[in-house]
Structures are given as C-alpha cells and as structure tokens.
Amino acid sequence: MDLGLKGRWALVCAASKGLGRGCAEALAGEGAHVVITARGVADLLATAEALRARHPGVEVRSVVGDIGTPLGRAAALAACPQVDILVNNAGGPPPGDFRDWDRDAWLAALDANMLAPIELMRATVDGMAARGFGRVVNITSGAVKSPIAVLGLSNGARSGLTGFVAGLARQPRLAAANVTINNLLPGAFDTDRLHKTFAASAAAAGASVADVAAARRAAIPAQRFGSAAEFGAICAMLCSAQAGYLTGQNILLDGGSYPGTF
Ligand code: NAP
Figure 1 (cartoon, rainbow, N blue to C red):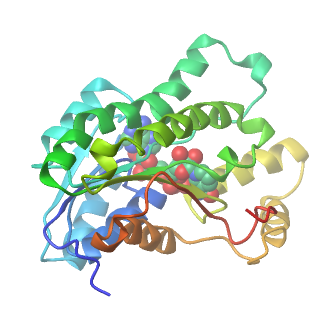
Figure 2: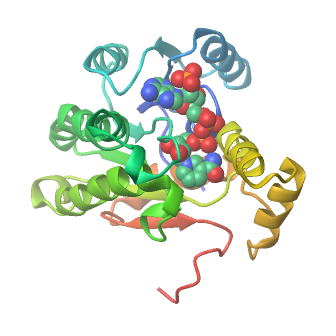
C-alpha cells in the first residue's frame, strides 16, 4: 500500500539510534523528507549518511541538540521547512527510588518526556491544521499502561503527556482538519536503552546480563524483543494518508506482554 507520504516533511526527534531511528528509516522509506535530531554528533551524522545512502530520493537533515531544551527545539524546527509529521521522542529518565528524586530530577524528566513534546506540538499543530494534514506520534512507553516501579519518573512524566494528548487530539479544530495525534507505547525493543537497563538490573541482582535478558524475553508472549524497524513501520502506518480517522489512541507494541483484554 502506498502510504501517501512522498514529499512530506517529518521531524523525528532523538533519532540517531533506536526507536527514533527506526521511525526515520520507515518514513524516509515511504518518501518523506526527514529532519533527525540527537545530542551526540558522531552517531547522528552516521545515521544521516546511512539514510541518504538508502533513500537517495529524500532529503535528510540532521540537527545536533537536546530536544528537552528551548534551544534544541528551536534548531530542530528551523531545519524543517514545514512539519507535516512530528515524531516526539527523547531518552527515558533514569531508574531509581522516588525517595531519592528531588525537584530537579522531576523537572528533568518532565522537560524531556512531557513538556518537550507539548512545546513541539504547540509549535506545529495549528500549521498542520491550516494545511489540512498533520500526523503526530509520541513515543511513550508501555509503562504508561502498566507502570514499572523503578521507572517512576517515566511513569509520572509520560502519564502527564498522555493525559494532555487525550484532550488535545480531540479538539475539533485539529481532528476535523486531518491532524491526528497518537501515542506509541513500546514494550521491550532491542535497542541500546534496553541493554543498558539489563546491565543495571544484572548489577543490582548480582546476575549475568545474559540471564536477565533471557528471563525478560521468556516473559514476553512473542518470546522475542521487538526491532526498531518494526516499530518504525507502525509509526509510518500511523502517519499515513489513510490513518486520518485514527486519533487520540495509545497503541501498545509489546509482543502481547500486557495481560488485559482491552
Ligand atoms: P536509545 O536506543 O537509547 O536511543 C535514544 C536516542 O535518542 C539516541 O539517538 C539518543 O542520542 C537520542 N536522545 C536521547 N535523549 C535525547 C535528547 N534529550 N535530545 C535529543 N536526542 C536525544 O533509546 P530507545 O530504546 O530508542 O528509546 C527511545 C524512547 O523509548 C526512550 O524514551 C525510552 O525510554 C522509550 N522506551 C524504550 C523501550 C525499549 O525497549 N527500547 C521501552 C519503553 C520505552 P543522543 O544520546 O546522542 O542524544
């Protein structure tokens, strides 16, 4: 199916690696021009080069910066001639015990995982509505639906974003103008982030990283971790021309891990 994305401009935040990169790859594969961001220069430039080599027909721009800061967001927006597609993403907050988190720890999590996506939506959705097409995909976490105790900063900040999006997506001036806003909730995906959490859990439990990974894999009905490519493919589907009636949803991609019927 042609997803109708050729020539659209996509701003994909935090996309030098992992899930963000998977989304950028899939969107470029559908013919969308992409602006990708990250803080680290080397990986970002390498990813941009790889995207250009694989998708010669699309324009790929890279912007170095922290998307959790006003400066990082301004640079990202300035590089994108018009934002037709916005994929909000940033690194996840660190694990820990809420007794150790002070106000600054909370503000850092809120900045990256709640306020940055809200600010970027504020900067883009009315323009999308005026042009009659817009797709926003927020990468959140399965922890929004099924909280993980040690990821309290993530549970809290992402739930704030989720509640906000539930209201925004249902504004008729957006929904009736073909602007959709949805959240993608990853379960366990095979990325650097996942491997870092395995290393931390293994160190805390005095177990090997391989054992921790095997136990986690065995608990997933699909019996495997997801790949960034399949995450990106679902993101591209949500951004497609055909998905205009799909808005305000929280879509779990977790290989069947969430145990509820709904
Ligand atoms: P990843 O493999 O560590 O990649 C993170 C990417 O984001 C990198 O390109 C990183 O580059 C960039 N980045 C991080 N913080 C940034 C910032 N403040 N500004 C700009 N770029 C930034 O992580 P991932 O697994 O793809 O995870 C993406 C998101 O999904 C995270 O929020 C994570 O918590 C969430 N999630 C992941 C999983 C999973 O299983 N992988 C599960 C649930 C939720 P730089 O470091 O160079 O900036």
